Amino acid sequence: MEAFYRTHAYLVEHTNAPVRRDLMDEIDWNDRLIGIKGTRGVGKTTFLLQYAKEKFGTDRSCLFINMNNFYFSGHTIVDFADEFQRHGGKVLLIDQVFKHPGWSKELRTCYDRFPNLKIVFTGSSVMRLKEENHELRNIVKSYNLRGFSFREYLNLQANMNFRAYTLNDILENHEVIAKSVLAKIHPLDYLQDYMHHGFYPFFLEKRNFSENLLKTMNMMVEVDILLIKQIELKYLSKIKKLLYLLAVEGPKAPNVSQLANDIETSRATVMNYIKYLADARLINMVYPIGEEFPKKPGKIMMHNSNLMYPIYPVKVEEQDVLETFFVNSLWKDHKVNKGDKNSSFLVDGTMPFKVCSEGMKVKNNPEIIYALHKAEIGRGNQIPLWLFGFLY
Image (cartoon, rainbow, N blue to C red):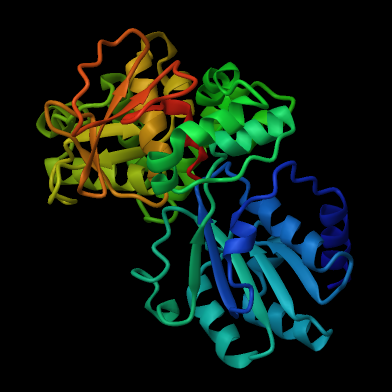
């Protein structure tokens, strides 16, 4: 136990979260079992350690453990939690819980057996906490940690403190909001860098970002999809090839029959793999209004614009990048469907949006909201694209 305390103290002391994530204030920390999901690379480990540092400092009533530790090959979470709470432990932070076999049943046992112990754990976005782990259904509170928004990236890079706005705020007051931001900074000076490398916090590390992102993407497929969905290793190359083909095709409706032919599997398996890639936050499936999985999506896009560059950087089209940025910014709190011939997307079933690149001729249709790239400030139903990066 002492070795775990020492590791915890070292990690907390050396944790430096340059951006305080809003999720820290959205979570009800009074709940006894809290799951924090998120795609690989968005900073879940740092988030747990930041919580420990902020709320407990060096107090030994809180302890961070990682299921990668070989100790847990021979010991259960229940036994560890029992010993920890007998040492006065009150809050156990478990990183990468899915690495431990039978983790959900053990968390249930801990919940029932140790009423004075709070457990906060991290897991992959691929995990379906309540749907696939029925023992946790009524007791776990689940949250999602996302990558940096453009607002968070801007705050970090320019040492600012801009707040987030709701979509309604932006639609009604975008000119006032834009002016308040422009009084301090020119967001367009930062937008391209964000779309290239600003979503994942590890861009701050002194390593090649594209190589790091490729490694992360491979881990998403090899660990998050194969391990959690219990897919045999021999199918790994098929899933990777599918992701590559979808990325190279750009945002459009997939030809499922052709993809099945290309990776030598059935149409049903292709659709399942597409769903896994979406769960891993590698792609987004955009459906026509009223349709959903297992139907074929109306459009498949990369989950965020950063993912577009390392796979096939020669072919990245600006319009595709801008639309990917827009959808990713809205995805957290809004339903995004495929638009009709006049619009790019339909948001929340009622609002048609058209994403416009620089120089695109805009025939102003009062029924449509335009998201304009390279516009610093908008007017009426024409809103600067960068401002949608302030939604979280």
